Length: 363
Ligand code: PMP
Image (cartoon, rainbow, N blue to C red; front, side):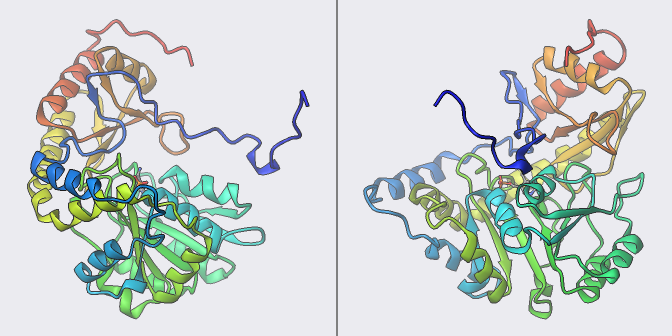
């Protein structure tokens, strides 16, 4: 055949996710950890990986890792599930709680993957936009869930890309107001230290998402997990691909998790650098950074697409959100190593003060 029939109709108009990996000196666009896993931990990883039977399928549920995570969180194995990055578990959420005739309540601007997954699974999306300062419109959310018909929501805390935590009181009110599944996405919780984990026992409709990609420097290995009620976790197990979490990633994650205390210094360094970055941004005329509890800072600046280009030409890659709904003229910078943050601040100051040769980007 020299032709092919059309793909599924829900794909029409979908633009594939593009993290825009471009060759630069400071990659500050994907909220990764600037510090890679240290040599001592790498040696342990190599030892573990050497022992793996690569001809065999991995343990589909990664039970050794599940047990480690469960124990650290005071839970049982069946209250934990790991996935190929948090992204896989977000897709599983849409498969298990979404679908035709089902409804997802979204709080934009937030992580775009939630909305994309809902659309791919033919789930209806109801938006309750955040306020101008990006805080959740709590009363509007509570009023909407009270109307009924919502099957699941995601509350991102801290929110990506805007940076702020959701209020614990609000999440508790929400959990009481609806029996919809409420996922609290805590991908960045290690940088904010606030978690809903203590409330799992009282709320069957609460599920927490975490990742190894940020605080634990493992974006390359792909490992995420959920914590929740055993019955909720079982529904996620039903929709997952049996071998999505490969044996190598399981081994890497086990070693990293066993050594997680060693990542504390790096986390504290990011928190300190974040404060410095925000102060630096505030000192640049016309730049408005938003407060952040995560490892990135969203800021507003006039002519953001032009500024993005000028930064790129100076070897600094940040994320351009200026064309996204509610995020006009917003760029997001990941907290990097101090030299990277300095390079970013210098390049931004030059761009804003007109010291760069500014060109309007072609797209
Ligand atoms: N949730 C949020 C809010 C995120 O920003 C990310 C990463 N960009 C994820 C989940 C998923 O991360 P990963 O797939 O790397 O675990």
